[in-house]
Length: 127
Image (cartoon, rainbow, N blue to C red; front, side, top):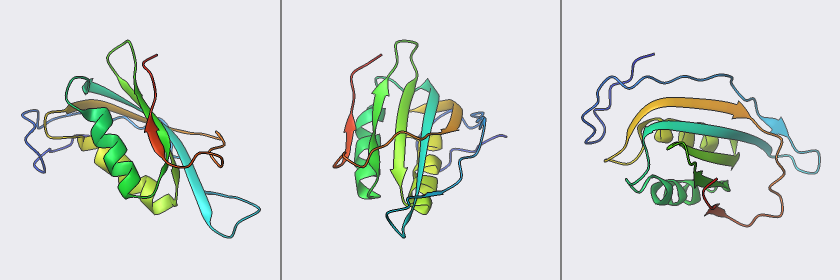
């Protein structure tokens, strides 16, 4: 799939995105609200461009739980959990990233990580 990054100041207008699998919403038996949880891997120029801070701000704005962290290989990894529409919106935002980022690869994996005790979205240390 080819993306056009007209919505920000990126100079790379042909960023390639790859989605390995699509996560479906899963229902929490103790709640009538469905929750979707996914882990994403973002590659490209995504470190040193405030990608993590941008992710925290956007995820909190969408009411998501989870985390974001840099990886030593130069990628960024994040876990998003919440309303399925909000998670889908966050995935779309991360495909573009902040203005200085150039996303060249994007993978989504379903996750069963339990975030019920977590209060909000946060940054984690580099791995």
